[in-house]
Each structure stands twice: as C-alpha cells, then as structure tokens.
Image (tube, rainbow, N blue to C red):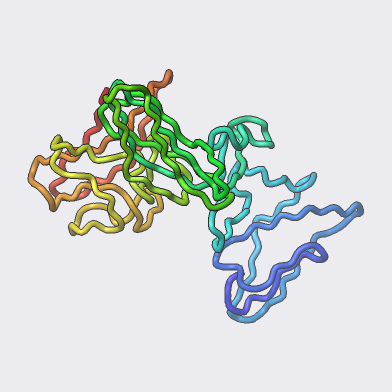
Length: 306
C-alpha cells in the first residue's frame, strides 16, 4: 500500500488498514476463531490514482497463530524511533551480572531468544602495577546515595593499561564513583585510571568492536614501537581511489579503523592491540573484515602476543 491517496484494505469484521503504509511489504497475522463454515473475504477500497493495494502469499493453517517467540527474529515487532533506548534481542544471560534471565521462556534453554531493555555502558582504562597494588572498585551511585558495585579488580595487573567496562541500569539519575583501596604499608602499588566514557549502547562482548561509538578495548600500541596509528574514520577515504566508502557494519558512511597512507614513509608500521584475554579450553575464534584497495597496498598481519 503505497501512495498519497491510498484507500483501505480490510478483512471483514476482523482487521483493517488505511492510508500509505510505505514502499515495502507488510505482514498480517489474524486468529480466525469462527466455529461454523466460513470464507475469508478481503475488500480493497481504492483511494485514488496515486496508490495501489497488493497482497501476496496468503496461507491458512490449523490452530492459533503462533505467538511472537522471537526465535527467528523480531516477529514484525518494531522499535519506536522517538524514545530514548531500544530493546535488544538476546540469547542466554544478559551482560549485566546478577540480573536478567539465563534463558528464554519459550524453550527454557540458553539458545532461545527474548528481548530485554538495554542499559547504558561505562568504559574506562586502568593501570595497576606493583606488588603492593590494592583494589580498584567502580560503583553506580543513585541520587539517594545507594551504591552498586559494577566493576572490581585486585592486585598487580602488569605494566600496561587495561580496559574495563560495565553495564549501567537506568532507573534514575546516577553518578559513577571510582574507589581505590590500599593493600598495605608498601609504596609499590600505584593505581591509575583514564579515558572514562559513558555510552547509551550495550557494552560490547570482550574483544568485539564495530567502532561505531569508539575503539572499545582496542588501542594503538604507541611507546615508539611503531611509527603510525590506526585512525577511526567515517565514509570515503580522503585519499582518492583508495580505502572504503562505507563501513562493513552498516554498509553506509559510518565508522571503521584505517591506516592513513598519506602519512609517514614506506615501510612504517601501525600496531593495533587488544585487551588481555584469559585462556579458554576450546580456544578463541578471531573474525574481522578488512579492506585493502589501491595501487600501493602494504601488508596486513595478525600476531599473537603472550
């Protein structure tokens, strides 16, 4: 149903839709509960020359219409565009510990899907190096001063910046509180944190990043080890006839990381490093999409650093 003067399409006594519904197919599902012999009649009332009505793929099956269980997708449920946050389709437990379901209601299994209200996310980098390092805690504090600990780390974490993130509940206004707890009398245990960021998106899974908001837990190596940095770019490259014009995530002029070939010299390197991952019994699978276009492409390598 598309056009400025579209009329109406209705199923007698059961369903009706009028006006312009956009240039796309819409799905209708109706439970027919009549107990006597019956027919189904579709009546289309034309609204004018600038609007056609079409139907396709009619089916009638025994039993009630299936309930929207979200196993195959959204079941034609749509997000409102004028609110603050979106519902997220999820399987298994939510990312916020000690809250949310472990499985869906339909299958009672962690592979089943459901929708839950998405929370915001706080991200920061911290540095905890030395034999006397204590504990770093991060709290979400409400207006009535109630605190919920959302992150905690204790002890020496090595001589490097580490990434931390935690989902935030949004029941009311809040503050983020960062607490450092000393371990003992020794002076060899400084703690530091930097680059705190609040986002209105779901915290990404460890190691995952689509670069739409920031670089997540990935960072440039620096420290004079390499010569150039990976940059967060958007849309077409400033260097003509090279680079992507759209990102892979949205297939539109959104964000990705790139190395600028207009900067530096031939043979310069740019290292992008992840956060530290804990070993897994079955290992990990690394997946990413890459784009290499131009007459003088260099080399892209992947290393594992213990």
